[in-house]
Image (tube, rainbow, N blue to C red; front, top):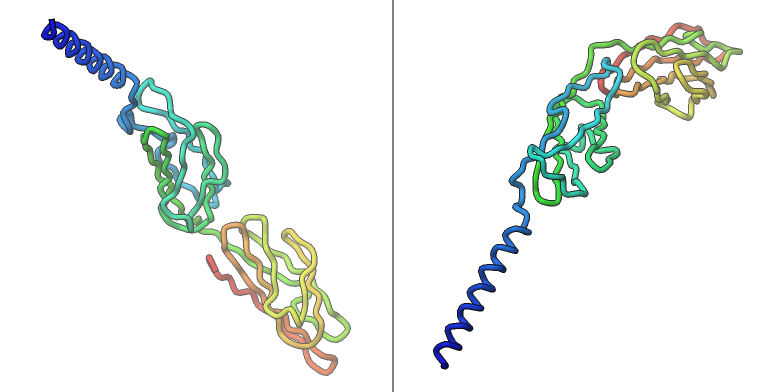
Length: 218
């Protein structure tokens, strides 16, 4: 009788283990076996393309569903970043610098996918003109206009004690505070910069025009 009871107990335990193994193997998710793809898989961004951002969409290579939330990352934060994301997509925004960046998406099961962003600058010109080109006695302001490049523009002066910029856009007003030589600097959206020198004369000095000096990427 004891042998029968013992045999039955072993049979019940064995059956339980088999059932548990089948049940667990059926419910357990294999990590990172499906593979994940990003669309587009490769893209080139240039200032002349009219945009410095791109939307990537993630999908699994199988009929299985993505395990949300997705984790988005980039290989080089100095070149760009993920500026926004939804359930299965994300917006990559370039900083305007040249280089190659890798965008990665990963779901909660460990499935990963990558895409390449190639960033290059178009060849374009940026120039400044001032009217008048120098400030003589009795004239303390001039209009400075930028030509070329891509808006929005950022304006600054090399010496704020000699003058200031007012206004925005492609044309601004420069007002001098006294005699000296000041540089007006304009930088476009993609980092191209250009400067022009404004000579500010006192009543006893002669006037001459300033010149513009472009500085790519600087």
